[in-house]
Amino acid sequence: MNSMNVLCLFQKFSFSASTIYLDLVNELFAKGHQVYVIAGSSDTGLDYTKVHDNGGIKTAYVALPDQFHTDKIRKGLIQLTIGYKMLSVIRKFFWNEHIDIVIYPTPPITLAPILPKLSKHYGALNYLMLKDIFPQNAVDLKMMGEKGLLHRYFSRMEKKLYAASDVIGCMSNANIEYIKQNNKEVPAEKLELFPNTVRILQKVTYEKTEKPYVTFMFGGNLGKPQAVDFLLDGIKHLEDYDAAKFEIIGDGTEADKVVEFIEKNELKNVRFTKQLPRDEYEKRLAKADIGLVMLSPDFTIPNYPSRILSYMQMSKPIFAVTDRVTDIHALVTYEARCGWWCASDDVESFAETIKKICDEKDKLTEYGENGRKYLEENFAVARSVELLENALSRAKERK
Figure 1: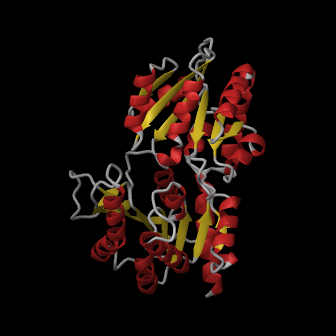
Figure 2: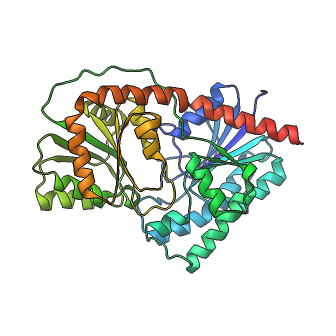
Figure 3: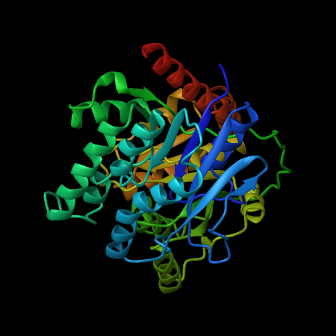
């Protein structure tokens, strides 16, 4: 198709951090599309008074307080202001540009009030990349009371977001079905499959060292969604089982709890490291045998964390420990055949599955290769660009 002018709205974005959004932005530009980025940042060293040119990608930053290391009330207040701050920056720098399509992920849902203004001004297609179903996820984790004042407010905001979006791209088929069942006012034709995707890196063969145990690694955010309490209980349950070792790398609201739990219980089968630079993290992951995906058992929404992609990228098999709603278990156990699954509310099952993996460690290489192949065939970032191109083509045909 002809070149698109794409406006991307991100509450957090960096050209130095490897994320699915950086891969998408770079791929859009590589395919010949003009890309404009509005990105929230709490970096005090950034110049917020000008447009930055990042290899041809025009980027304007929105100054935001740090919302990832603060309490939930302050975070909620920050979320409420994001949309209008973004609109102010758009008007300052990109208001006179021609925009064909506006793309934005959740979180946040609080862009809802500015989307009709952008649609009226640009006449562009609004494309929601649905990565987070809020406020239900906060209710699931008991971070927000159901039917309370906050819940009612954000539920209205969520409905406004869906109404203002011309297309809603969902991470998995279970996500599509969830929206259909719980938001019946959303026309089915608005919904389409828009999976998490990454730039496929050149395959690297890592030197394997023989060791008498299997290393399970969890890397990333450590918060309530990641069922950190369950993971720690499971590790303690296996403290006398020498065939399995654990490595946890990351930061978040539950990070201090991890340190305290390990020290209090004098656990020898786990190593914890607070956040590492990307290259150091990947070196650690390369030495691990299997990647852990953790999700709270309380979720009633089908989450689909992008962490699985980094494991597949490095040909690492996956042990998914999740709620019973998400369809990740289907991906891991029979669609990609790249690992094992158990529910994150059953410590005995967790321990039994760890022992089963250790007994079947001859399958690790096969499952890792299966995951890599599935990634290449289904989760390449070029697919996301094609979906956006097709959505805009359909919109133009209808006009």
